[in-house]
Amino acid sequence: MKKEQGFTLIEIAIVVVIIGLLLGGVLKGQEMIANAKVHNIIDASTSLKASIAMFMDRYRSYPGDYDKASTNIPGLTPGGADDGNGNRLIGEDPTVALTDPLVATQRIKEVILAWKHLSVAGIIAGSYDGNLAHIGNAVADPDFGWNCATSTCLPNGFNGSFFLVYGNEQYGFPINGNDDNRKSELLFTGRQLPVQVLQQIDIKLDDGFPSTGLFRASDYFEKTAPQHCTRIADPGSVAPVIWNVIDQPSDCGGVHVM
Image 1 (cartoon, rainbow, N blue to C red):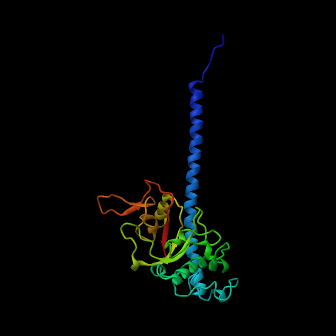
Image 2: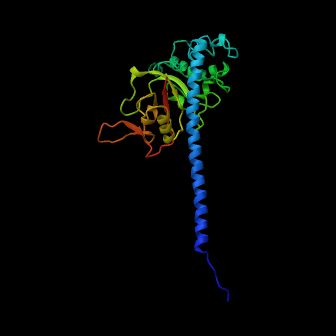
Image 3: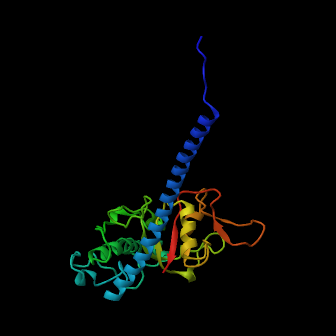
């Protein structure tokens, strides 16, 4: 008769250690990938702010809004098709755009022309077509800029797109909501960002709170459940709004106040 032998305790311990090392390596790799994505968004945002400042220094106008772009930037379509209206608002006033289709069309035009102006001027890499059909309808959807083709708007690395626009979507719901007296030029991160990524960006660049400072949550994701990317720290108090890392929503967006 043959004597059956099982694994010794030492052999089992070695297997457990190897499995632990493999799992640890996988988790560490995922953490490194997540950190790299956070830094990519931060680096891209910082670079874009510098690019906008460079464009303004060179042309004395915001990209997208520049009314003499086709005259002074070689490579743009002549005749005004690639020109903004020069009123120092990228994309017009959003409250007016909702009621006036002509202004709404100009809003769409300037939002996507911002990327075309920057790229054709050689200030950012890439090629952007300025195609009006590649972005949503500003009348039907005031938050149209969250969805834009990568051939038209600068991609953010999370299946969304950065965009520049004048507005007031930067105040974290529900403390401040939309404040018409607080409009400014905004740089949106685009959507599809996990809330943990936005929290890390906020901690590294600002104060860590989505309703204060120069980096904030977008109200767009707080208007309709289940997209809530922020929450009240303590419902029984007047504590500040914090990022909703408990529920871990994966489709969020942030706003750099310019």
